[in-house]
Amino acid sequence: MIKVMIVDDEIIFRDYLRGLLPWEDYGMGIVAEARNGVDALEQAKLCKPDIMLVDISMPFMDGLQLTEQLKQSVPDTVVVLVTGHNEFEYARKAIKLGVQDYILKPFTKEELLLTLIHINSHIQKANENKLTLKVNETMLNEWTLNRLIMNELPDSEESRERLAALHLHATSTYTYQVACIEIDHMEVNWSNSSDRELWKFAVTNILNETLQVDGKLIVFNGPEGRIICIYALEAMQSAAFIEGFEHLKELIKKYLKLTITIGVGSVYPAHDGLRRSYSEAIDALHNKFVIGNDSVIVHGERRANTGQWSSGIVNSQRREELQLALKLMDRQAIESQLQDIFEAMKGQSLSIDYVYVICMGLVSTCLSHLTENGHPVEDCFGEHFYPYSMITKKQSIDETANWIMEVHLRVIDYMKLHRLTKSDKIADLAQQYIHEHYGDPELKVEQIAQHVFINGSYLRAIFKKAHGVTVTDYVTKTRMQTAKDLLLSGDMKISDVSTRVGYNDPAYFSRAFKKYYGFAPSELDYTPNT
Image 1 (cartoon, rainbow, N blue to C red):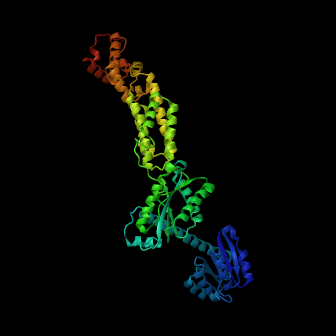
Image 2: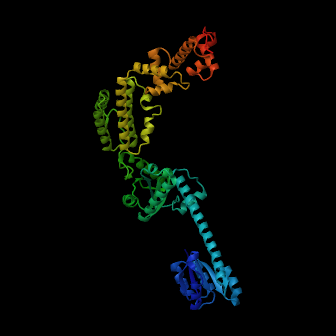
Image 3: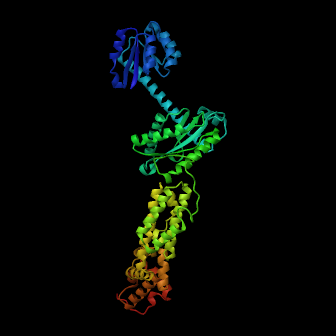
């Protein structure tokens, strides 16, 4: 609603203006009235009206004097002078002092309305321009700050001026500490980028309203959807900063019904230290993989364990027990072994890189067992199985533990199935399928492999070993022998035989037949029916 204030020393005229228009119908409302310039100035400071209808002749402080005062106290307020004909030239000169418009007494309802509509348009345009400038300023600040923390900010006068405006100039006596905030499971919960931005905005608002610090706090959107906080302070102390984040975490959980994880770097002086603190905050944030979500993680509080696969959590004895459970196909033992390993991992101060090493070691042991028993990995897991990439995409150590458990149990199920189904039996099933479907023009190796529940590469290997020919050659052999028998029976035309054995084009069939037997179908000694 547009706020309007009436300033006139005549009560009758104030009443006239108040009742002249249905103000609310036009999105406006009268928020204050004053009978002189002094009273008007005080009220304007309190209610900050958008438009003031000001009489030019008033006691104590006239309209022009009031206008000059308003430009200093309430600069965004638009002044419209209300004047008589004998003051017309005086009113025109007032335009130069900042009066937006004037209206001559007596005026009609339509004249007042047109003036206000014009002023309203001016106010809306000014507000739009301010919003655009604010958005541009915010975007420019975020660009500057992101380049700064990534050490990519050009060394230019413009950059130095922008940093100085943000209290980050090189000669500052402040020390700096950086925190990085992630909304947990954001990509999973909100696939739409606008939804994610809305939740980040909500978190940032609560942060700005609740985080109380002695120094200067700069908050902006950083890389990979994170919220970045730069805390500039005059003393090398950060306890209050961290306590504030613990409180913030609880408020977010209470009011937004979601969790956040915060990584906090150390306190450093100057720009180089700021970048280092940011890097530490990111490293701390990565540790939520081990520690879990809904945490404030301070860099340096978790020791980076760099032990080897052969010692520590997965020692040789534990590895041998896991291998034995795989050989015995003992699901219960495997589940127990893996649960013990991951509980031990969560109970120690491990770096995320070492956690990845342990996880890949577990997967490697499992896959080695599979291949040592003559089964290709791609047959069990498909051709697009990339364990390391899959592990690093997991959000937590618990999620990774469940995935590795599934890998081990899938290997057991696969081994049980193929222990009962020998390769020769699979090859025989494939051979039977070919005899039943050789007439299908679209018959391919992958279709046959899918029928016997293995991949194409594995089928090619076991079929050649069992039958001495490739799958493709066997399909051709079956088609050609069947075609020859049909032609010699004399019951079918060449075109019908071609279709019967899986060739849609009789000419192509004839060429394939001649290539296989050395003579064309027409050269056979047979007498087809007409």
